[in-house]
Image (cartoon, rainbow, N blue to C red):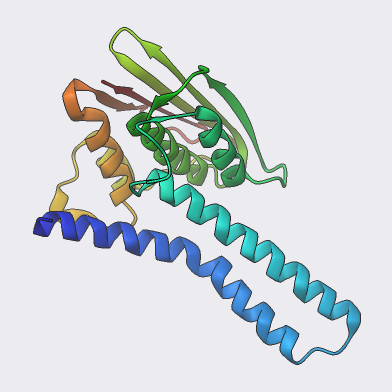
Length: 212
């Protein structure tokens, strides 16, 4: 692996560790509370905390495995239902964000699924006050067309992530925060593909990619 490849892998590892820190830390806190707790009701609450945190950690690992990793358990073509299940865990079940899914049935290239998951993660994180996340994908004349729309009362996109998506961020300026966006663009633009992003808006974000 080249030095640049090592650096990219290190940045992706940093992002994964950062995103897993909260649920794994909650597991540790739950175990500490459980160790010294004798009240049955409080022990039940600790066990609920442990179960929720363990489930969140497992869901995030499954998501990152396909979005960032080699995903050895999958072939070159992936069933979009696998991606849907992962995005549903990303959105959560608290009703803060609703999910719209308009993805063509049939398998899709793993590269397209990776881009879809990465863009879904970026769009989800932009909905700081909740809203709606719509995911669409279909086969077109030029390849797989992937479109995501995030709408809400407050949409915030980090300037570095926007630059990475637009292709104006140099590789030397990559951070753990921007590496997934940069990787998405690189994957999309291979073999003549493309990635587009809508102009800045406080209430809407559109992301589109053509995967050749």
